[in-house]
Amino acid sequence: MDRLTEALALLQQQARPGELAGMARFGINPDHRLGLSVPAMRRIAKTLGRDHGLALALWSTGIPDARIVASMVADPAKMGSRQMDAWARDFNSWDVCDQVCGSAFAASPLAWKKVVLWATQPQEFVRRAAFALLATLAVHDKQAEDARFVAALTLIEAAANDPRNYVMKAANWALRNIGKRNAALNAAAIDAARRIQQQGSKPARWIAADALRELGSAAVQGRLGSRA
Image (tube, rainbow, N blue to C red; front, side, top):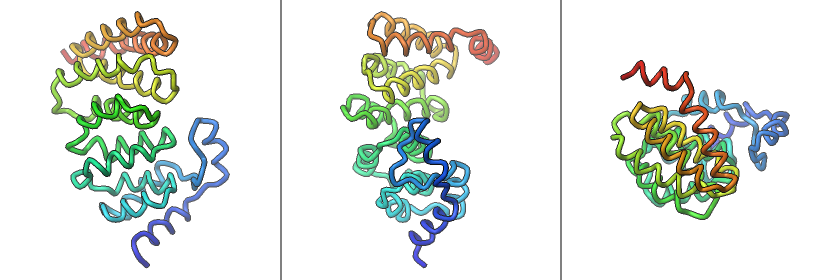
């Protein structure tokens, strides 16, 4: 049995076709999906181990569950620029986008370059990927300087009038995560949210109001104050 056949057999064993309707209600694209839970996919990825060649083969199947597992077994150091762009263009569901950004793209040395590039792209899920990746970096890139995130706030401001749901929600997610990183970035993110609010469009007002509500909350302010 070759590696791809083995991996697909493991996926089929955990398939949950009865869950697809419920997933669709959460905006998850059910097309060609097996219905695996994220914990099940993580267990399969752990069983398979790191294997970049297998990741490419799994991605080529077009099965969303297989693509999520592909991101978990891929080697971020081996992900070239063209591969990242190609995978991003293939996104057609928010969950695959976010899982790939968190499992593979965020660990790539090209991650920050892709945030900047994808934030201006017209495709909904490519643009979402920029902000999902930025939201992930705000939590997990412990070495990044504040200046990188301050610069990234301008990308969020520029996208704040995009009315597409999956872009709007990811831009808001990135803004909130930046603002929860430390006290200085909290102040910068709140200032950005106020500027976004002044843009006046419906998506901009929603992004700003939701971010200001969380970033100015007693819980967030208290947590950041305790770190100072």
